[in-house]
Length: 432
Image 1 (tube, rainbow, N blue to C red):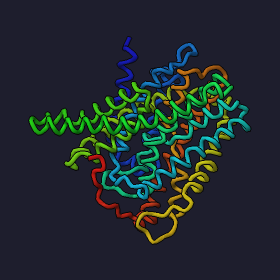
Image 2: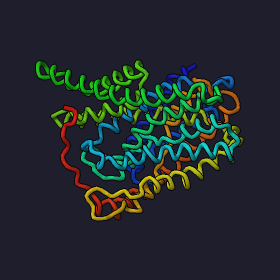
Image 3: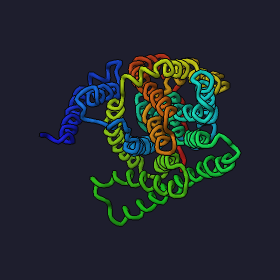
Image 4: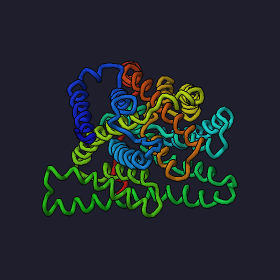
């Protein structure tokens, strides 16, 4: 009898070989790699040959899903930070501030209203649903993000910086929903939530991201002057920066996701050799792609037809309102008065605003927050309701956004991007 683990390795190896050798054809199709991984995951799950099983005897192993998605997210948000080569000036980061400061709260609040009024949830569960689904995904959205460190496109910059930040900044609202589920009397915990989970954790995440990244870059420069590291080992500095930043920030009750994104920004702006962050980015992106395979395979393997059917109408309500109403309208509101960089136009191109509204891809970040909520008090019927709405929303996002990304971005590049390429001044090391 062959060990199931060995068969898993065989299937994953074959999958990687097929998608790698066929990537030249796949990339030209209105088809995402994530959709292929999802279908294979379903085949490996209980409806297929049963090689991957996170559910045994109706018990869902949320801890495994949480740890795997946690690893994927911290690597992905670091990659987002490392891609961004822009001065830290409010005017240049205006689109990010709008998407985080306005769009994310709008999305959470609107989804909470949907959960309360249309799905019959109490406010705690409704806010938790909104917080889990509000962040866009930095892992599955690679086709609409910045392509490299020389890419200054504002649409791609907005989606990249949003994906890197909102996976961290949704955390306070996830905590809010969990607290409200446990105790409906908000007065018992609201003050601690404001001071600790909102103010302290965000501020600490930013500070730790700067301090730890600067310290590692300084140490790297010092030691490399004396004796250069082995070329094959040097890229592991990025991994060490991710793990050290994340763990130390979590130790002091800060948001590790936020710290890691900031660390990626700091690393990009701190190395004097521009090739160093570029080499790290290439290594991190390869690792990110490998972890994406495992995560989407897991998602496919945990899908069950009957529970998805039971909550199909509720999921459809959430999906239609989120994708067609809440996200696009939220983006439109958030970008009112937004002027494109170095452009004579008074407002952002309407096509760009519509594309930002459409590409609110949901994925690994939402899976992480769901698994985290499972481990921190989410249980019973409300857990099943939220979980299957989340799973179905992610699956639909993988399909519709994956299919539409290539043709829509090709249209954008032909008709809009060439006309409004911004000239971003050379970045100055703000952290020195």
